[in-house]
Length: 284
Image 1: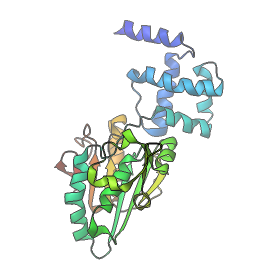
Image 2 (image 1 turned 90 degrees about the vertical axis):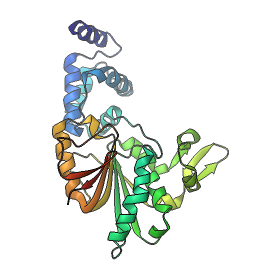
Image 3 (image 1 turned 180 degrees about the vertical axis):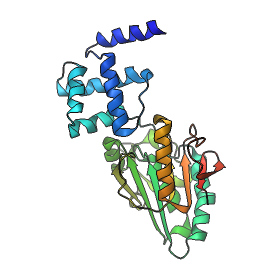
Image 4 (image 1 turned 180 degrees about the horizontal axis):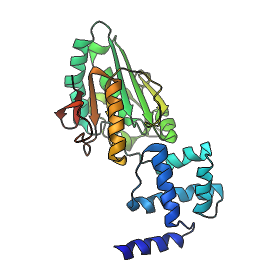
């Protein structure tokens, strides 16, 4: 094992842009301090590939120069660094059972509990290129009982580039392939470009913002539903504990939290009741 690590280190130092073990440790620290993302040693090749593009764009010679630039708190490059290290894997109606549970159980309960105020707030925390919040909005628009309700969806992501992409609401045909038939009416299709565009009625429900989950949140809540799927897998346990405590505090007393299929709250939080299949309700 030691030999493999040494060989990897030598390979890194012989590439186009030399990256020493000290450089990678610096990058790991910057990533953790800024975002809470824990870059494992196994991701060294991936990080090298992504940051090499930045090195060429900046006309730098080695990672010593790049690390120095980050420590100067260059706000523009810090943003580019964050965009480079984040992973954005998403799809319309990904883990569709979550959207079915939202439609069949969560919304009927919220409609019953909130008849007087008729207000629902949903947060897609880690929205990537927008497929998740638009899927949520399609579900909202498909429920007649919510027609005259004040429903808003906040969609945030650490990566400013994917947030800008999400705002366009434009997706290639292959990205739209997983939209269930009953929701495809919410897409407008361009026959020439084979591109789908989310219709205005759906888009107007969603507000996109760049947000670092570890920094102060501008919204006060309360939120009724939080989708935070496949986000905390990049955080260590200490960061997860803090984040889920903050989620609890911003959720309404009848609020729900939905996380990714590979995530759980075991030893992370006791303030949620598990409903199965990574769906949780705030403990009352």
